[in-house]
View 1: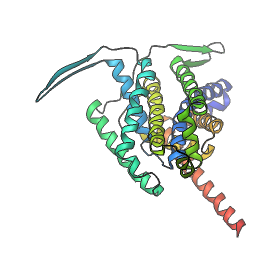
View 2: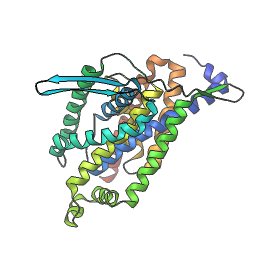
View 3: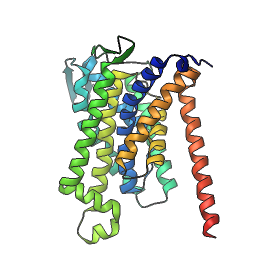
View 4: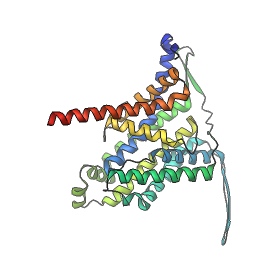
Length: 314
């Protein structure tokens, strides 16, 4: 085990700052999960796959698109020039919103108000299908969209921060604040909040809960699209790397609770710092494993607290 990080304080600063920037991005993904979980009572196992799909949309902007369709009466070519992948933070959420609404109308609307385990199975199926579709369309190679944003040097060039990470953190904060304002000021936002508090009462008062559920799942997918676009320029993309993002989001929501944006932000940054320290101490190969181990410990702890509470009530 490498304890150099504790012997060189500047490495602790490097790990902490990397972790905070990374955690802000995690928090954005978790906020989307918390929103649709709180409103629809659905645990979305496909959260990570929606993130990666959003990343591939941004990557397609980066590489450009030259697609020829020649099937029966259809014969045309789509030719889109390559643009900077940062535009993905605008294009990807728009496309992913409609993907989310489509998934709701095809699958999710059939499991709303059903047993939570049913929603887990349904979204697990979406996860597997999305993985296979991404593998078929984009291939199994690991890819990254080069942003060429450069780096920022701090503390006499002792701490190096990629500008892509700083950009990702800033964009995540902007979208999170924008969504909070939208939820408080807009008619649809107020309807979503009312449905989250009591769906039956909201329906009696005239709220179209079906529209609210579709919009909520679409907003969650749009946030995944933003996060995916940021991941495409900050990290790497692969059709089968969505699960860790699902686990991170689930862990953050479990710690912070539903409807607690400050808690989600703090939990996300804490998880990011934990990952960076695990990377330094255990090595990159154990980074994801440490996240899964932390999830197990959190679930065991919560189970222990729940059992203690039940004993007290007896």
